[in-house]
Amino acid sequence: MRNKNLFLLLLVLIPLCGCSHMEYDTFRRLDKEVTLFEEGIAVPVGNVGPITVASLLNGSQIGTLVSQFVKEGDDGVFYIESEEEIFNGNVYELALKIPDRTQPYRWEIGTRSASIGGMSSMLAMFGLCIPHQMLIVQEQNPIMAELKLNAKARMSCTASDYSTSYTQEIDLTDFAVPSYYSARTLVQFDIPEDVTDRVSMLELEDLTLDLPKNVADKVRSGNNCSFVISSKYKGSVAVGSAFKMTQTLPINNLKVEIGKFKLRQCQVSFDLENSLPLDVTLDSVKFLDKDGKENPDIVFSSGVKIAGGTVEKPVTTPVTLEVKATDGSIPDITGVEITVTIQAPEGKSGVPLSSRMGLAIKSATATLRGGITLFGNDK
Image (cartoon, rainbow, N blue to C red):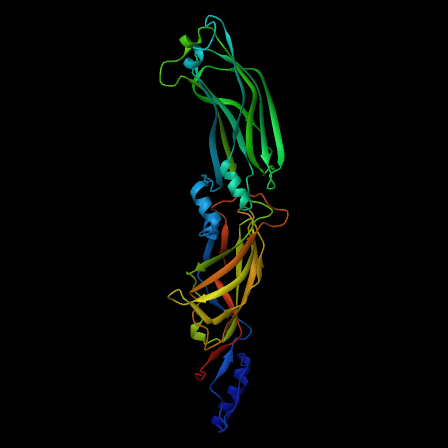
């Protein structure tokens, strides 16, 4: 009677535990293989991330370009900068050509121009744009006297189709140029923040300088005896509306310890936080063994889409991946290789890229669904 009651108790308890597989063998005995927790069980997962802008671009043509020419500010924002010389005139050489050195002289320099932000044109080829642009025209006056400058300063921006998309002009009439040895700002262009097409050209039209009499006697002592006009340019780096690229990345610091459960199929669920201003599509996931080699017997689902966010407002997307072992059971997941397509969200391009942006798994656990097999026979 005692054994019979124990057997009846087992029949009641096993369904309550979530058993989905129960068979009798030919000898009418209970099969040792049971499947538990089909409704889900949480197991620890090591926090992963962030997958940063640099790691996404690493190994690509864009990444090579960015690593060589793009700088990182103290706030983590990536930017480019350049300086171009527009005019350089030796005052002593000029003095030799002045007909009457005892009289003031108008130095008619003419129109001078320079290409600006040459690196930005290369970035534009890969779908990147340059918001928050700044363009300053500087002068360096070696003469110990204030000069009068006349010119029209004009800058222009070029779109991806090489058309001129924005221009700005500043009239410099009888503009006072103070006597100062080092470079000082002559004029600064206030470029609207929403202008993301690259600044490509700076022009000084009909440039003249009014010099004092006996100008050669008023040049400061030292090696610098030239009047110099130059430009200083800076702009942030962002993804343009046409930006799109596919990249493959290994992730080797995962810690999903599910091998002991002998799962043949399950779902791994977690929260993925995205502070990149990019939509990310998970094209494929490949299982990597402890040696970093692909195991084709473990198959992941794909096609997950993750919305873009910002550092200030990251977007969290619940992600569920189907994992299946085509042969045997699923081992511990310590590494995967993911292939992603990243592109600018529709209508939200032009957000400056930062080293603080990235993709990260924020949940401390993963929810496994699909049943855990215990006491099963090896097949």
